[in-house]
Length: 306
Image (cartoon, rainbow, N blue to C red; front, side, top):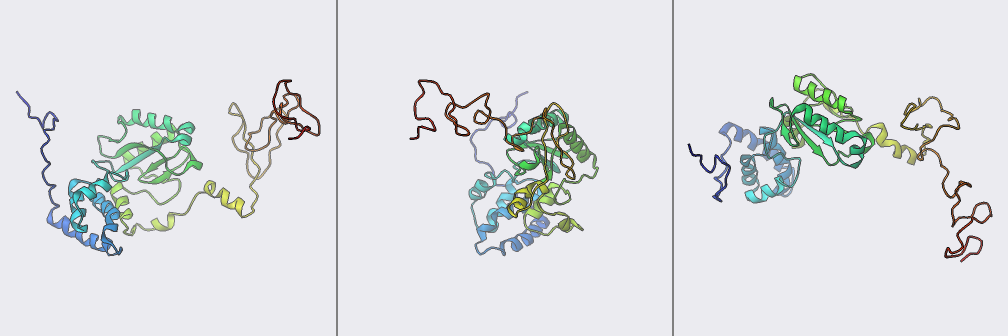
């Protein structure tokens, strides 16, 4: 039996047929919502981004039909709409799950465990990057930055934060999502489906009771710099070496390190070649005394001056 070129996935360069339209009832509803969105802007084409979120909330991704709707609504070409929809990664181009699980694999999250989390979830879910589980619940993807480095490694579900994750906690998280067990973000608004999230991003109110009040603000770690700028004194903290000891001392008491303990360079100055008599720096003089330097070294000593 022979197969057609389309069945074999071979493109003959034929132009694609126009996208089908939405059913009448769906189009009527979307048109009503679209008019509300467009009315917010002095220039109608400025409404394209929220309109793409609107059509994404209908089917869970931006379809050719959705892009045709946006183009017709705003008087744009489908090429112009496609250029925007394919530029931003927040717009999905193919069917995806109820929960978009994004694992940050950028530098800080990666070294803190993000790479291990992503590999664990790929194996556990049996999917690759950008793929969706067979039950349609979870789409897994790596994200370059979740903008939450102070809580690394971070996983986001439908753009809500799950901070300080481990491979084990991330695996429990996706298991709960697939089982329908309620999960709560570390901070931010309560979790909802990706379609519901897309409608909120389109600019429509979150009607869930208490959701807006629960959204809160930045977490404590994100506000440390602001507190320091206001003159507040942070509690003392000692970071122990990786091979032993608690990571943080309770904030209500200050830990006095023993001579054997090694403080992090972030917490206290350490002996360096400039401050350790046993390892003097050739180019540095301390306490008025000249440091030894090789006879052939160039340039004046601190005492010789320029």
